[in-house]
Length: 144
Image (cartoon, rainbow, N blue to C red):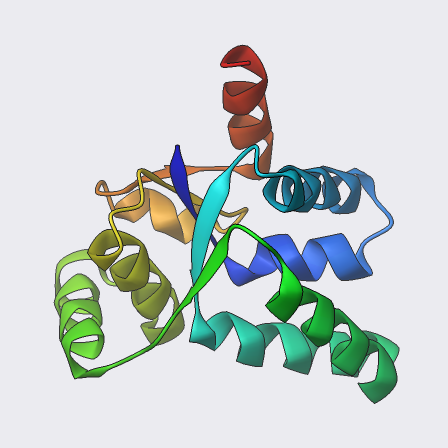
Protein backbone atom coordinates (compact mmCIF):
# COMPACT_ATOMS: atom_id res chain seq x y z
CA UNK A 1 0.00 0.00 0.00
CA UNK A 2 1.42 3.41 -0.99
CA UNK A 3 0.74 5.85 1.84
CA UNK A 4 1.14 9.54 2.46
CA UNK A 5 2.48 10.32 5.92
CA UNK A 6 1.40 13.69 7.28
CA UNK A 7 3.92 15.66 9.29
CA UNK A 8 2.14 14.90 12.56
CA UNK A 9 3.17 11.23 12.28
CA UNK A 10 6.82 12.29 12.39
CA UNK A 11 6.24 14.95 15.05
CA UNK A 12 4.35 12.61 17.39
CA UNK A 13 6.98 9.89 16.93
CA UNK A 14 9.69 12.31 18.03
CA UNK A 15 7.95 14.34 20.73
CA UNK A 16 5.13 12.39 22.35
CA UNK A 17 5.60 9.92 25.15
CA UNK A 18 1.90 9.11 25.07
CA UNK A 19 0.39 6.18 23.19
CA UNK A 20 0.15 8.22 19.98
CA UNK A 21 3.92 8.69 19.99
CA UNK A 22 4.49 4.95 20.31
CA UNK A 23 2.04 4.24 17.50
CA UNK A 24 3.67 6.77 15.19
CA UNK A 25 7.10 5.34 16.02
CA UNK A 26 5.72 1.92 15.04
CA UNK A 27 4.67 3.31 11.64
CA UNK A 28 8.17 4.74 11.12
CA UNK A 29 9.65 1.37 12.10
CA UNK A 30 7.48 -0.33 9.45
CA UNK A 31 8.71 2.26 6.97
CA UNK A 32 12.36 1.67 7.87
CA UNK A 33 11.91 -2.10 7.50
CA UNK A 34 10.11 -1.79 4.15
CA UNK A 35 6.78 -3.09 5.36
CA UNK A 36 5.22 0.06 3.95
CA UNK A 37 6.34 2.59 1.36
CA UNK A 38 5.44 6.21 1.85
CA UNK A 39 5.65 9.68 0.44
CA UNK A 40 5.55 13.00 2.24
CA UNK A 41 5.88 16.60 1.17
CA UNK A 42 9.05 18.66 1.52
CA UNK A 43 6.76 20.87 3.62
CA UNK A 44 6.91 18.11 6.25
CA UNK A 45 10.57 18.94 6.90
CA UNK A 46 9.63 22.54 7.73
CA UNK A 47 6.78 21.55 10.04
CA UNK A 48 8.81 18.80 11.70
CA UNK A 49 11.89 20.92 12.32
CA UNK A 50 9.88 23.88 13.62
CA UNK A 51 7.86 21.78 16.09
CA UNK A 52 10.78 19.72 17.41
CA UNK A 53 12.96 22.82 17.80
CA UNK A 54 10.16 24.51 19.77
CA UNK A 55 9.64 21.50 22.06
CA UNK A 56 13.11 19.98 22.37
CA UNK A 57 15.64 22.48 21.01
CA UNK A 58 17.68 22.92 17.85
CA UNK A 59 20.05 19.98 18.42
CA UNK A 60 17.13 17.54 18.71
CA UNK A 61 15.49 19.07 15.63
CA UNK A 62 18.68 18.65 13.60
CA UNK A 63 19.17 15.04 14.77
CA UNK A 64 15.59 14.02 14.03
CA UNK A 65 15.69 15.81 10.67
CA UNK A 66 18.82 13.89 9.70
CA UNK A 67 17.09 10.63 10.65
CA UNK A 68 13.98 11.72 8.73
CA UNK A 69 16.01 12.35 5.58
CA UNK A 70 17.75 8.97 5.91
CA UNK A 71 14.54 6.93 6.20
CA UNK A 72 14.45 4.24 3.53
CA UNK A 73 11.20 3.70 1.64
CA UNK A 74 10.22 7.36 2.13
CA UNK A 75 9.94 9.58 -0.93
CA UNK A 76 10.21 13.30 -0.29
CA UNK A 77 8.08 15.19 -2.82
CA UNK A 78 8.90 18.67 -4.03
CA UNK A 79 6.35 21.44 -3.90
CA UNK A 80 6.06 22.99 -7.36
CA UNK A 81 3.56 25.14 -9.23
CA UNK A 82 1.47 22.16 -10.39
CA UNK A 83 1.18 20.93 -6.82
CA UNK A 84 0.25 24.40 -5.56
CA UNK A 85 -2.42 24.57 -8.28
CA UNK A 86 -3.89 21.28 -7.04
CA UNK A 87 -3.65 22.53 -3.45
CA UNK A 88 -5.61 25.63 -4.42
CA UNK A 89 -8.30 23.44 -6.01
CA UNK A 90 -8.50 21.44 -2.78
CA UNK A 91 -8.79 24.64 -0.74
CA UNK A 92 -11.68 25.80 -2.92
CA UNK A 93 -13.51 22.44 -2.87
CA UNK A 94 -12.86 21.25 0.66
CA UNK A 95 -12.03 24.41 2.65
CA UNK A 96 -8.72 23.02 3.94
CA UNK A 97 -6.00 25.26 5.35
CA UNK A 98 -3.15 25.87 2.87
CA UNK A 99 -0.63 23.54 4.55
CA UNK A 100 -3.17 20.72 4.80
CA UNK A 101 -4.10 21.31 1.16
CA UNK A 102 -0.44 21.01 0.14
CA UNK A 103 -0.23 17.69 1.99
CA UNK A 104 -3.46 16.44 0.37
CA UNK A 105 -2.34 17.58 -3.09
CA UNK A 106 1.01 15.84 -2.64
CA UNK A 107 -0.74 12.63 -1.65
CA UNK A 108 -3.08 12.86 -4.61
CA UNK A 109 -0.43 13.71 -7.23
CA UNK A 110 1.85 10.95 -5.97
CA UNK A 111 -0.86 8.29 -6.19
CA UNK A 112 -1.10 7.57 -2.48
CA UNK A 113 -3.96 5.28 -1.53
CA UNK A 114 -4.34 6.83 1.92
CA UNK A 115 -3.30 9.84 3.96
CA UNK A 116 -2.18 8.80 7.44
CA UNK A 117 -2.71 11.60 9.94
CA UNK A 118 -4.40 12.35 13.21
CA UNK A 119 -5.66 15.61 11.68
CA UNK A 120 -9.38 15.05 11.12
CA UNK A 121 -9.53 17.85 8.55
CA UNK A 122 -8.27 15.34 5.98
CA UNK A 123 -11.61 13.53 6.25
CA UNK A 124 -13.01 16.31 4.02
CA UNK A 125 -10.90 15.00 1.12
CA UNK A 126 -12.21 11.72 -0.25
CA UNK A 127 -9.33 10.95 -2.66
CA UNK A 128 -7.05 9.77 -1.26
CA UNK A 129 -8.80 8.27 1.72
CA UNK A 130 -7.87 9.56 5.18
CA UNK A 131 -6.97 7.11 7.95
CA UNK A 132 -6.14 8.02 11.52
CA UNK A 133 -2.97 6.55 13.00
CA UNK A 134 -5.05 3.93 14.87
CA UNK A 135 -7.03 2.99 11.74
CA UNK A 136 -3.87 2.70 9.68
CA UNK A 137 -2.15 0.43 12.21
CA UNK A 138 -5.25 -1.77 12.33
CA UNK A 139 -5.39 -1.93 8.50
CA UNK A 140 -1.74 -2.90 8.18
CA UNK A 141 -2.01 -5.48 10.97
CA UNK A 142 -5.03 -7.08 9.26
CA UNK A 143 -3.17 -7.33 5.95
CA UNK A 144 -0.14 -9.20 7.25
